[in-house]
Length: 96
Ligand SMILES: [Zn+2]
Image 1: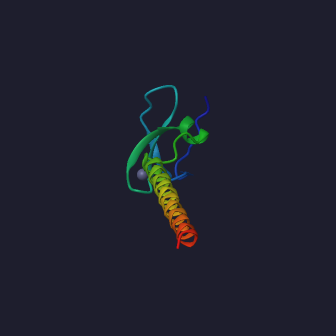
Image 2 (image 1 turned 45 degrees about the vertical axis):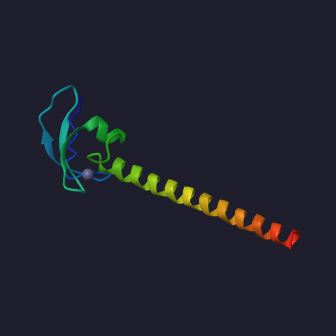
């Protein structure tokens, strides 16, 4: 297997600092995430894009998804109230 030096390269939020002790068939790299966390990632995971952060990226994405879902639910609740008011207005007109 050819040894490719990934030092200094960026993969998503990770910057490769140095090679890390290898624990399996794949070379491992010590990486620093944008949030400051240090993790060791295999070169295979880095190059295939399996790992792009220490895990904070996934947390942020989940949080963003949660927010948009909350917005959707709020919008739906508002729409329901709007319909209720519309029906109420129609009823008032029909029954003075
Ligand atoms: Zn991170």
